[in-house]
Image (cartoon, rainbow, N blue to C red; front, top):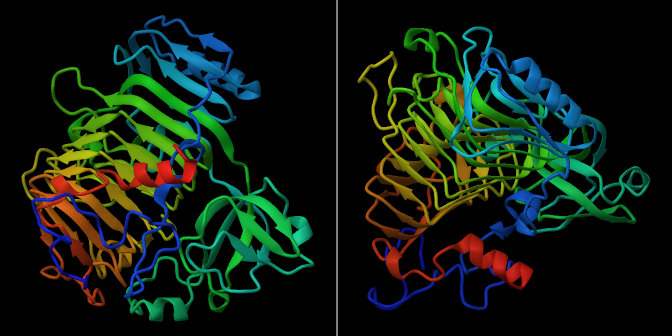
Length: 497
């Protein structure tokens, strides 16, 4: 089916399959136009192969009604030594400071929505999180690739003399320099500028084996890694493993005017995390008004994280500069947002800032009332789409999700410090709602099966270079699309379930 064609194969009143996903699909399948579906089934905690295992040790903290920062932080530090669950019973908890998880196998757990964490600090918060899991990874050595690596390959080649320094079980990042040639190949000369000339991590992986310089990875490559751009493998250190936040409510609202003086303040941040989770977490309000200052959950420089069963909304700061982002991911691989609801943010679900968001899945998420406003309580601005925001998010999946505001993947041109092309080879599968889907991706992308939503493939351009039109199949025939969830069906195939 040619890019831009709008009907499913067969009659619209019968069950149908995408031309990219036949009944005998394998990850090697490629259509006559060179398009293919990535295997998205690796997203989530432990690649979806098991659920988190709770540490056996439980450290219960009793609430004395005052500032509980020091007591809870002490429990988290204790748990960080050899693992543990820090349990906060139901009740209202006040924190005049922030909480940090520094070690692996640590879980911050409440007793459901009745465990209400209220953060009161109103200064020095720019770019931080009220609950922070992990820290920025460090790179420990670099090994140049000796051949180009292409999407869907499980192995990369390094020099035979270098291979001995890389071992099975190592955590690694694969990336390359944002060269002038890479920029020009994407038509972004003069547009992309924030990361020019720097090495950027495009893929976070675990080494399975090493033999004669061939490094086999646990998850296939998503982005081309070219010698032209100085592609290389770097070991990643300082990562934390199997950490999570679950079964509690959070709020950090302050004076509305003061909230607009701060920027990018998140409730929960995960940085440098391998196999992490956030589940059954919600923002709350004491009076039915605002629930959080600016940001909700941020996943950064991490891999194999699942955010599930959570609801965030009613951000105070929905102005420019990265605010009002409720479920946010940056430069991370194989993250799963599942069964989450975002409302009344600026961009409720968003990929943001930097290259290297790959293999991320949004499954059965719902978004409503995304709206941008430049001032407290203002009505200026317009619809705030869930969207890919910056620097070529590659090979991600929006699956069985509803958007009553909209979802957008376009060339944003010079906006947001040269966002430019925001996506390529991304798939919107079985999308519903009353909003607008804008899919104008660099190279190719796909919209497969819709119900209710309007779809724009070429009406909106800030920049150019989004031709040919993205593949569109089964517009307004999503109710009969098989399978209903691409992620779950691919996972069933891979794991034999």
